[in-house]
Length: 164
Image: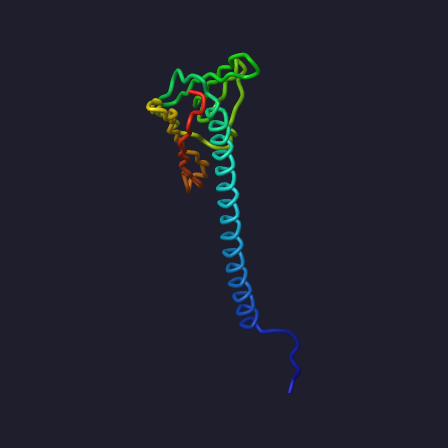
């Protein structure tokens, strides 16, 4: 009997097929994990932007003396600060919320997210009750060509005006 050294062609084909199947499985799991991580990061970014914008708006609005414009896409009001009147404007511009404070402009949201549907409505004060402003806007994170939107959160709040 002759002693054989090495593997047959059939044994090599079976080995390569099994390794290929294992690698395909690992690739699928890794891809799903990365996709979930990306979606989680996008949701976190959308949430942070929306919460920051809403907290900035509500903090300033509580001190408003006069609300001049309150509608779709724009909110104008004035606040008494250190003995003088400061004017604020919040509006959507280029799918972001922009704040104008005494003619100085700054962005409230990142350029990585999109803000749509910014609107407010004013319920006037009366019978000893303060005025109330209802705010709402939608913050989303655009995705790749497969998914048009990765993350999307609608923010709503009602602000009671203390000095109105």
